[in-house]
Image 1: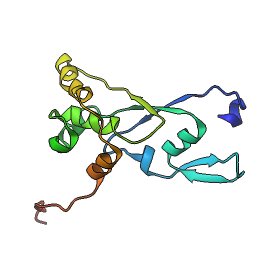
Image 2: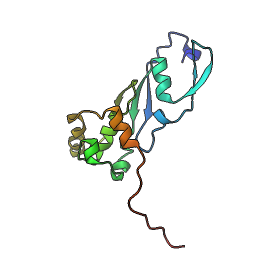
Image 3: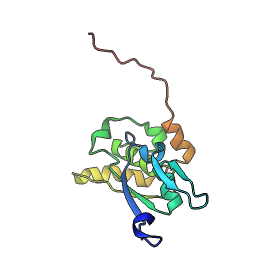
Length: 147
């Protein structure tokens, strides 16, 4: 932003999709950051770059247009029962300082009511969030189709 608009560029918000299948904002190091203190260019994830640059993230697509409703999360670990609310709870619990809000679209009024369950409970702590993200050993085998 500084390269285009100078030091007083005014850029304070960006929008980025984030959900359990698209966690690149906080897991993938792909964004260049010119460190003003060292003069070096570093490669960080987008979340770290926004924090360092004092830019806020507004996330979108937390339910991936409803396609994530079949991706299971533990009701016990997520502290909610509704499938959509579980994914919203996951997004709102991502430990990113610069993430302010998430845009969520709904087709039906009942989906709004169901997903509001997420705001009735505390966000996951960072430790709880990373525990949910920890890979677990599969207890069942998926049958491979015969070739």
